[in-house]
Length: 399
Image 1 (cartoon, rainbow, N blue to C red):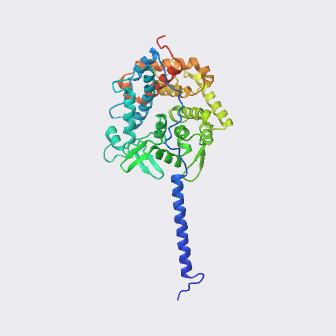
Image 2 (spheres, rainbow, N blue to C red):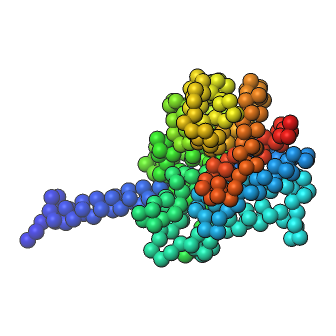
Image 3 (tube, rainbow, N blue to C red):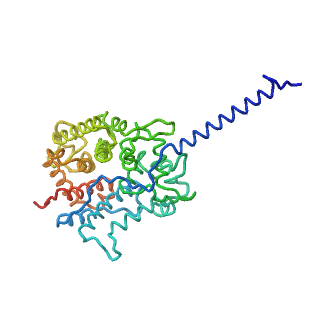
């Protein structure tokens, strides 16, 4: 007969049962931590980093007409739609301020376009109709562990989506989308906060800091840190240190994404104090160093190009066209992050900024539908940078 005392089968069975119970509890607790370790503010709109955009002069009206040459194709990519949406919101704000953009419905054309793009990206049935998603193609947004995940653009898998991790969330924050806004999928109704929650849990500082840092700060501040799925604490101080440790020109779009992220965190920290003074000082030093390079590397035509980090522009261009060297996207990106800086910091670049704006205006004047179709994303940055700077420092382009 089997013994039931210490060491007997019953005792072993008890140990096994207790072990499995503890393991189950650990797994359950781990899963709970993955989905609830970060508390998010309810119905939170992103902190605004741009001042109110208001401009009432003939130049801005003419500029709006030029910028409306940039139109979204019938079957855009997700990334094109995100960039166009962001441009629309700037055009909308300025059109409203001039009181010239209203149409019969009481909305501007940009407001209508913005609402349409937002719905087509956050409502799955509308996404399928707008973007022509076919059977077997990967979905844009899907439920996943800890929230909602965004697909990445991949031609082999026939999937459309963001070009790199964090890009979709970045543009939601840039387009002032609330965490409480609905995301309607086949499985039910979710919230934008579910996208943010998963991005926080599976954040990779080495891969996506330049895109996600601005969105995280705009949605979470004054909160100074968050936790990933394995309970690693990530602070904005750590993110900033990661951003400024590498050379300014490294990363997406010749380093301009990195510069925009640093400028955005600094802007938010002015009011929300998410960065300690020593880190702010280091970040300012990083950006003033970039400004010094821009003062030296601007090309005679007013453009900044991939060689913007050099002590002087390339002596000769590869071919006789203004668009060589990613001139549109680099110049537009630089003007966007410079706009976030205080006058005292960018004043040494006043002449260079004016020359850069005139370069982009000249290119926009000659813009054709074929040019837009070729690179809508670059032109959206160019147009947006011209519009926001016009509200800060009006420029008479005809002179």
